[in-house]
Length: 130
View (cartoon, rainbow, N blue to C red):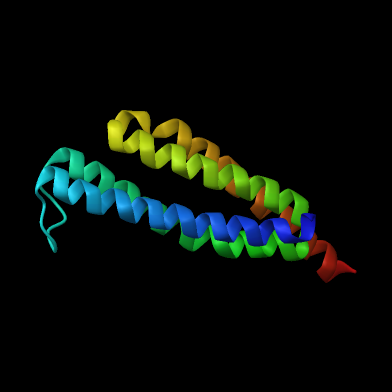
């Protein structure tokens, strides 16, 4: 099971990306911001930034998850990855409510990312040394 946990995290990350995409589409209708505009009502801009920040974070998270699952521990990478995904959902929902509410979700996701990164780097160093 542990070996498959990182793959489950990838699937959940895709669900997260679909969710924030849906949030932006819904916010466009709610706030009257027609594509291709990316500014207008502050409510829309918060949702849009939550989506963009999630995409930006995913670009870093997926290689780190691979590194952690391959050279570190798939169990550690998987559990920290689940925490990362949950925290990013929290981040997106909180940011949509108010910009000042986004920090806790960001901090938890950043901590999870660091755990996976350090685990992967430690495993890679051990592999290179041995």
